[in-house]
Each structure stands twice: as structure tokens, then as C-alpha cells.
Image 1 (cartoon, helix red, strand yellow):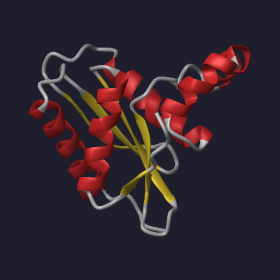
Image 2 (tube, one colour; image 1 turned 90 degrees about the horizontal axis):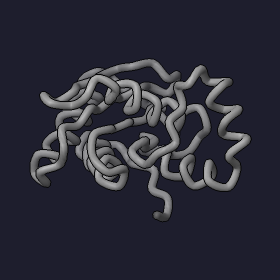
Image 3 (tube, rainbow, N blue to C red; image 1 turned 90 degrees about the vertical axis):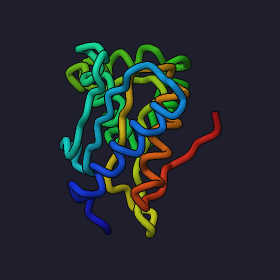
Length: 145
């Protein structure tokens, strides 16, 4: 299993932010966590709100905790609201079920971390996460929209 080193986590953040700027998105916050849910790298663009860290972290943390991206979390939350209310309580509010959290996989398919992005529409946040992951030489877990 590959480790998610700071240099590659930073590359994910920078590529994700560059994608946001190239598409004139709202100011973004990008959090990269390792497979244990620990923060490795984070940046918040000028103008991004103060809650953006918590949302970005929660998208990534929930993805690691549940084993799939936050787009799938959002889909399941619609069908199972009571279960997701329990998850929110059990996680101390750290799980955010909204697109923008994407698992990072190495070449062998092992999860080495997750990216969470907040600031624009969830679909745009997710696209920037995927671009960042792939720019750093990892594989983004993609689920159908």
C-alpha cells in the first residue's frame, strides 16, 4: 500500500484549486486526509467562508469512514435519513453527506486517503477533487452520478 505523503497531498490541493480557478468557481477549501482520517494538507482560498474547512473535512472523513465517496453518502442519506441521523451523532457531526468527498486509491486499488472540497456546487467540488487526485498520480474512486 502506498502512503499519502505531504508532497503528493499538497499536489492534490494545488491541482484541485487550479481547476477551480480555471473554471471560475467560488472560493474553495480543500482538505486531504490519509487512510486513518488524519489531515495531511489543507488550503482555503481567500473569500471562502469559515465553515468551509469543517465541510471539506467532513466530506473526506465521511468517505473514509464509510468506504465510499460523499456523493454516495448523499444518495444513501435520502433513502435512509434515520440511519444518517445516527451516523451524524456517532461521528460527532464530522460526516458530511454531500458531493465533494472522493476516495484516493493507489495503483493496487488500496484506499490511501480522501479529498474533501467545499465552496461551490457539490458536482464542481467533486470534479476538482478528481482532477487533483489524478494530477498527483493516484486514482479517484468514481461512482455513477
